[in-house]
Length: 296
Image (cartoon, rainbow, N blue to C red; front, side):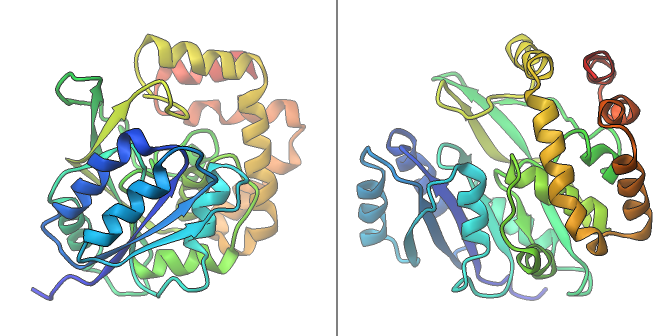
């Protein structure tokens, strides 16, 4: 077996001091020791930068702290991924308030190191959910069907926390550069499914998602999550996200497979009010399909 390569960990931060100590400790506990940490801090006003500097002073691994663009979470992560000094090779993504299980980097790098180097691959670990001081519990397995571009148009199954990309996948995203989209991981899911990249879903958990009031979106299951999604459909938020993704995809149609390109052209040719209803069958869960069809 070949030695696993060095991998940069890309993490966006903003006012995450309350959670960073444990997350940074989980990086240090990885059984794959060859990593560096690239952090883009997006204007924190708490002790986030001090926590990072203290960690950097004691870590044997390189830690680079950058100034974020302060244009939101998506711009911060795409700023990291497209940074001109980022070396070629695989990358891993981390949220400031999660925890990584010790084998996460090893499992992910092993998964994306088999196929030819020009085949784009994205590794997605399963996640555990932790609320407060309760013990971690497994989240429901959302990927009941194979990832597809049709599905990516109406939902995101490529959660950015813990995501690992091989060099070909990194190059494909960097070739396009930063774009104005609602969610950076949804953007990657669209491009990867649309271009024929391989998405490797691991049923073994690699990340503990810590739910708290400061989460941007929160867990994607349970009554509160369902009510939040319904509100986003009713108030037009979801429609705005959908339209922004289509607008970002259209100039990059040449990056898509012929099948995905034809589908995108067909959707763009429809009246805007009919697009979501036409695509609603491609949500994974029946209740989500119904909600999308009704709201559209």
